[in-house]
Image (cartoon, rainbow, N blue to C red):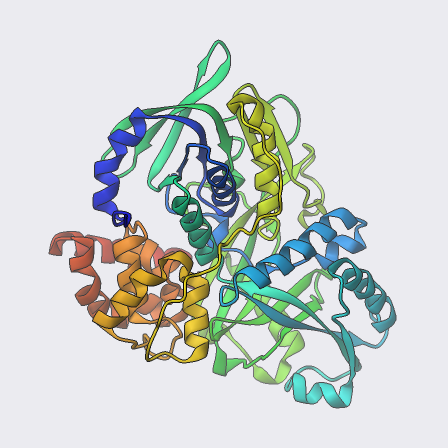
Length: 526
C-alpha cells in the first residue's frame, strides 16, 4: 500500500490523530541527532514520533561545514576512541549512501619552519589510517603540487600531504534518515514547538507542543522523551549541575567555482590565531570556512555571519591564494551554524579549546543528548535509546545494521550516470516517486546547477514543505548556490511549485517577501 503524500495537507489532517496516540518515544529536535534516534527506534518496532520547532535540519544540521570526517584533530588531543568511532562511521556512510556522502581529498600544505611538518603530520595520519583500516595519505613535493593546487602561495612552501575524508549535503542527509525512519512506521512533524514537558509524580510522561502554523496546542503522551535539540538542550531539561551548552558559531562564505576553482579541500592554519580553516569544493561552488566563536545572539533567530567573520575568512583566502584577490563582491552567499558544545561551566577559555565530547543528561522519563557530531549520529542514537530502554521497557542491541536500506532498481532515463548517482543518494526510498515526476516534468537542471527542477516538485509533494525557505535553503540548496538567493528564478519556481503547495497568490507573495528578507538578513553579507 502506498503511503499518503507527506505534505502540509497531510500534516493538518494527521496532527489531532497523532496527538491522541500514546507513544513509546517522542523525539524533540529534527536535526541529524533527532533523525538518527527516530530511525533507530523505528527499526526496532518502537512507536515513535519526532517534533521539530521550525523545520527539519533548520538549526545546525543545514548549516554545518558539510564534512563527514574522522576527526583528525581529535587524535592530536588524545581522543582516540572518538576518532576510531568517527572513522568507522565515515566509512559506513560512504559505502551506504554514495551520491549523498562522497569522498573528498584534502591537501595540507607544509611551509618551512611551521608546525606540523610533513613527518609529524604523516605520523598523525598513520594513526588515522590505522583506525580506518587502510593507508590513505601521500606526500607531494612542490613541483607536483603546482598541478594539484594552482595559485597556492608558494613562498616557503615545501610540499603538501594529501589525505581523504568525506563531504555531504547535511540537510539532505537529515531528510534521507527521516525517510528511512518513516518507512519503518515512524512519524515526523515540523513547525511544532515544545512548550513544556509533562510530568506525573516527577516523571516525564509526555509534552505540550504548539503548532506554529495554527497556534493550536496539543498534549502528547509517551513512555519516554528524547531531547536532541542541539544548542537548545538547556531550555526544557531540569538542570542538576554546572554543565551546560556553550553555543559556538561557525560561519562560511560561498563563492562561484570559477572565482576560486579548487578540486581538493585545502586545510591550513589561519595566520591570525593558528586555527584550522578550509577552502573546499561543494555542490559545484567553493566554500571558505569556518570560524569558531561564542554565539551571544538569540537562538530563536537564524544565526548570521558577522562583518568580523567575513574579514577573517577573506584573510584566510588571501593568505593561501594571494593572486586570486577574492573580495566581498565575489561572495554568492554565507551561512552560520551554532555548534552545541558541552561546557563544564567555565566559558572563559578559547572556544576552539572546548572538547567536542557529548553527554547524556537523564531524568525519570527523559533523556537529553548534549553535544555530539554529525558523523557519529548513529552511535549517539543507540546511546540515547539504551538510556530510554528502561522507561519504554524494550531492549536495545546494536547489531550494526545499515542506516540506509538497499535501494530498489528504479529506471531514471535521460540522466547521466553521475546524475543518477546523485539522485539515488539524495532521495533514497523516494526514487519511485521521483521517477514518476521525471516522466511528467523532465530532466532539466536549474541553470548551471546539479539540482533538477523535478527535485523542487518532489519536495513540494512529499517532503513536508511549510515555508518557502524550507524549499530553497534546505530541501534544495539553490538559495545558497544562485545569486541573490535565486531571486531571478522565483517566477519559474512559482509556476512549478505554487499549485503543488496549494498556496493562494497572497500566500505566495507573503512567503516570497519573507524569504527574500530572511536571505538578505542571514545568508548574504552584513
